[in-house]
Amino acid sequence: MKVLVFGANGQVGQALVQQLSGAAQVLALHRHSSQACGDLQNLQGIAQTVRDWRPEVILNAAAYTQVDRAEDEPELAQHINAQAPAAMAEAAREVGAWLVHFSTDYVFDGSGHTPWREQDACAPCNAYGHSKWLGEQAVRNSGARHLIFRTSWVFAAGHPNFARTMAQLAQSRDTLQVVNDQYGVPTYAPWLAQVVCAALPQAMAQGMQGVYHAAPAGQTNWCDYAAYVLQGAQQRAPQLPWRVQTPQPIASAAYPTRAKRPANSRLDCSLLHQSFGVQPVPWQRGVNAWLEAEYPTP
Ligand SMILES: NC(=O)c1ccc[n+]([C@@H]2O[C@H](COP(=O)([O-])OP(=O)(O)OC[C@H]3O[C@@H](n4cnc5c(N)ncnc54)[C@H](OP(=O)(O)O)[C@@H]3O)[C@@H](O)[C@H]2O)c1
Image (tube, rainbow, N blue to C red; front, side, top):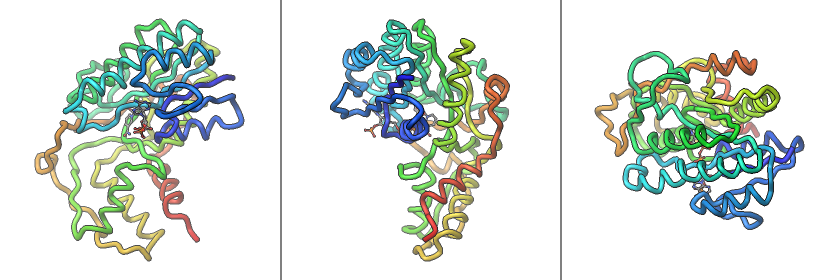
């Protein structure tokens, strides 16, 4: 199977390429690729890449993911998160390819305490979420066969993310305050890649296109998540100069950010489980795998 990957250097993109290696003929592109255009700012370029290479599947893991910065450059966020997926989807329809696209719990307004379902109303509370919502609509309305996976709190070894930032700050600061009133589920990118690769052939065989929520089981808040990361990191690497053992909980109101963050990022993933037989795994399993990769035993 010919698979074209955009955003191959990101957390999810890299995990997808690793997961696919050996099983598919993969063209993995990033922003500066020389073999074909992989720059989502170049709409004609990425459409031409699709037309030239004629893949059976396009995996779009590229995105503008800087949530705070998106408040200051919403047009650029929309260009990459909405207009580029639209151009990709149009070209996918032309060549008959499936488009797998990724979205986020940030398409919801973050209210309430129950996990969001696929059909719940979208009302993003910041510019990044708005750009991702526009991207979803563009893919859905394109006429291309598609899968959209909404996920949350993504992390992978070797990349900048919340877990790595917490571990670094715990070695450079004397105290660490982390919000404890925003709830969600940390999603390990290699787990997400496995889910995508398990679901995709079933979706293609049975025409099961649509939106699916994809996150592991359980829930946590940022402070408890940070505590879990620090405890594991300190157990695995006691020789490092840890200065903070445990983060202190604070309310979001005491930690203002440029972009508003949703308080409720929980995703109901029962449709994914029922449709593709994906077994729920606790989010801690992904963090444990991340800890093993970031702090290997000698
Ligand atoms: N990270 C999260 O917590 C999270 C949560 C929910 C949903 N998601 C969604 O999951 C998907 C994957 O996210 P991720 O965590 O893997 O993000 P990531 O690690 O930030 O990767 C995004 C990739 O997109 C690339 N990119 C940005 N602008 C580009 C452009 N103009 N042309 C080509 N590539 C470009 C980036 O390249 P550069 O490094 O060169 O900029 C980066 O490699 C995205 O759709 C994201 O919206 C992420």
